[in-house]
Amino acid sequence: MEFTRLRLRNFRNILDETVEFVPQINVFVGDNGQGKTNLLESIYISSRGKSFRTSKFEHILNNQNPNTLIETIFRDEGLDSKIELRFSDTEKSLLFNGKKISTTLLAQKVPTVLFSPESLQAIKEGPEERRRLVDELIVSVDPQNGKVLSEFEKVLKTKNRVLRDFASGELERPHAQDLLESLIPAYVERATELTYARITALKNLSSGLEKIFRAIINSSDVDISVDYVISGDAAQSWEHEKIRNAINQRQRELALRELESGVCLVGPHKHEIRFLYNGNDSRFFCSQGQQRAIILSFKISQVMYHNFVHKTSPVLLLDDVLSELDSERRDFLVKFLKESAAQTIVTTTDLAFCNELRTEKLAEFRVKQGRVERTN
Image 1: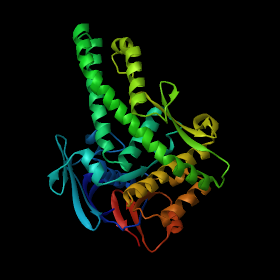
Image 2: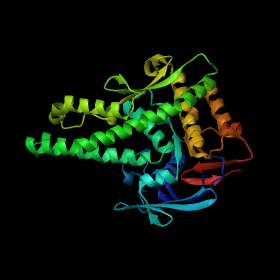
Image 3: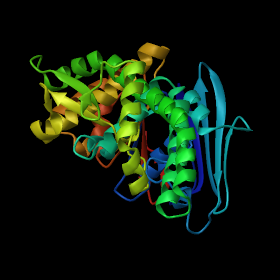
Image 4: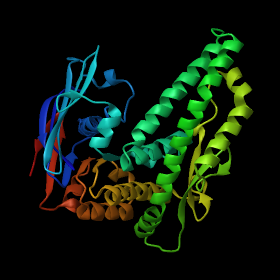
């Protein structure tokens, strides 16, 4: 799987550029603020129908001309497909080979794995970042999980709207309770499906994660695992029924508090995910370098697990992560990229990185003030 061409028009600071990719390593070099991440963002949007930098598509429009085009050619098993995204200040269209496509189906057809500075912060930050990390994993490994995630988000939104309307006085208590009672079965089922998908993916990833982490830090005397926590209980071994029962019980316990607060307090959007280093929470017991090694291991494991399941590799997107890694982690990443079958698209401010990655299959691009030029 690979991208072969990208055409951008009026996308952020890029007015009109076309890029031809190579199948292995593509490196975009330039100073900060020149448009490197914009290029990577456009590829991510082409695979997900949404940005990893903003939830509002109007933020990606060019200020001078709000009619934006992202057009990519994606090759899978020798067949080329065209992905088109057109934005304006009033509308957005997403087309796959000329036909409308949902973001869920797009993620199934065009798998990518993103590794960004935000990924490196996932351990330090709150649980929302770790949930997002795992949700990207489940969609990448099994694209059908995109539908599971989307359906949960829809029913969560509906439930929150009922709770909010009651809290604001727009709904009387009997009416709100009737609506909630009718919603709860679907909500619990969708919440159970998403939770089980997360637990299953983490369980399947665990052996590869530990193996790669030990290789990165050059030590076999460490244990790395991921703990999925539901209402304070370790749930990484739970099956459907136990998950469903736990969510149902918690739902009953917090029903009154939900009405009072006007927000849903139960479900996978509240679950905690902990990366454990020798049994201890890595947020508190790991150095910054060890934390970054864990996330690097997670992303590489994700690529390798995808390859194991699908017998092909997703496209790997690396946004300026080299400056965040120490020399040992950087050397491991360079070695992995040289040996990997995955197409890789990298942004960096460091010209030396191109020399470290140098292979006959590397394409180097210079990015300056929104203009892109291949330099090798």
